[in-house]
Image (cartoon, rainbow, N blue to C red; front, side, top):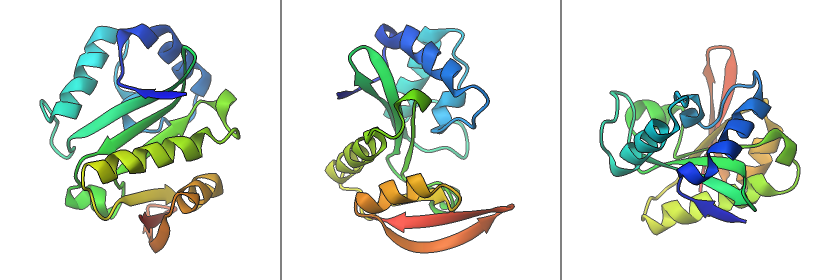
Length: 164
């Protein structure tokens, strides 16, 4: 298992990953980016990591893929800093695990690696948010040192806000 910067090498696996998600809400947000031109997707992700060409309301962030063999099993997006809106609801880390790879501890590994990267960037405290209706996510955050700070209501959802 390794964490890699997105590259053209994993295009086939990326397309399989997206197809496997079906109609699920896509986490983290860069999975929503247009990917029919895969080289353009890689360029856009690279721009975000460099803090270039970032749309209003977004912040600099790095997307990384958790790889097993040649397969993407998870995706993390690490925000280098937060604006007021993302600090309120969003946090520093967004991640997701491929449906066929869930329940194998990859989420905890990916969360730990994401926290380690942010700590290496001297980000403190680290905000990690999840929907209250997603106990697997909450348990992963807690297992990686997250402490529940607060709960907020956003629309008809309750969001739990943790600090590491």
